[in-house]
Amino acid sequence: MSAGAFVALSSRASRRAAPSVRTGFMKSNTTAIAHVSVVSLPDEPTVSVVVPFYGIDVAALIICVDGLLDQDYSQDRITILVIDNNETASLSASMFGRRCKLFHEPLPGSYAARNRGMRESFDDIIAFTDSDCVPQRSWISAGVKALKQATRPIIVGGPIVFGFGSNSAKTACELLDSIIHHRQSEYIFEHQFAATANLFVPRVLISSYGQFDARFFSGGDREFGQRLTTSGVGIVMAEDAVVVHPARRRFIDLLQKGLRGVGGDKTFLSLREASPWAIFKIQINNYLHRQRLISNRADALGIAPYQLFKLRALLTLIYVARLLEAIRLVFGGKPYRV
Image (cartoon, rainbow, N blue to C red; front, side, top):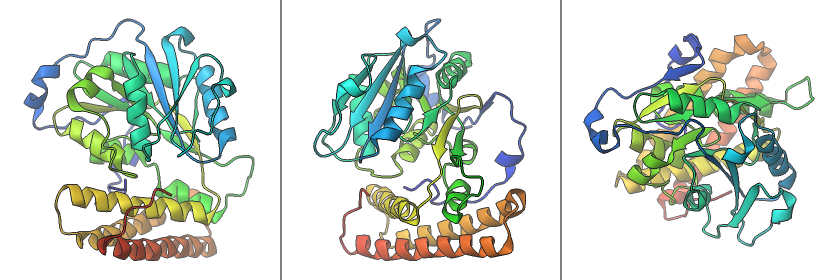
């Protein structure tokens, strides 16, 4: 399911005070994790960072890996696992140095690639980020600290901050992307999951609750996180565990992400044997929610009226395309990976 589906806007997350670690524990079904009552970590646990890669933007991947090689956490406790998820292997291990391991996973989908990374990892903690993200220098330290401070089993998410490059003037697409996507605080506090652009999971929880559902091309992070949190596992926001994600400048990139999200919605409904027609309600609710997000952010971002109109028009175009994609899927089409 796409991260925004079934979302009812709450402004509480944005108004909360921001200590370095905030919790979002589920209040029910805590007895379901009796078999994982404690996650014991060593003083300096080992960490595997799984980075799935698909496409041709090798330059962004190298910047991501460089950021991981410059962490303030002990480098001999970090293993970087790059998972090439292109149909044909497209990367060379020599591009990244000896502290980075490279694997090819031909099964399509970023969650299949992340699962491959889990299978290749033997460390205490598995961290996830995306190949176009730039982890800040204390990213691993802050994520590990949050896990070690916990008194019960938890997963940890961190902020996903948008980067706008050297351009002082943000394009309409960049603004729209930064408003409607990667709302990590909302995901954690309102919906009990964290986006895999910034997620830390103790290995023992994966052993107990399983990997990502590789049938998802989009929204698998939500299914995974809620599978754990509805079983009583806690979820924490580590405010200092920051990654930077470049804002999308091109409309085609926003459109492709939107179409991928519809496929995630369809997979979610299929797995729960829900009516396929419910996908249209999801799109409408999601559209209205994101229009409200634009309204709520307009004043804070100083968006001029003409630009506000442009943002709303772009979002409307995306959702017209999403409704057409929903029709295609209802009548037997397969989700796009785009």
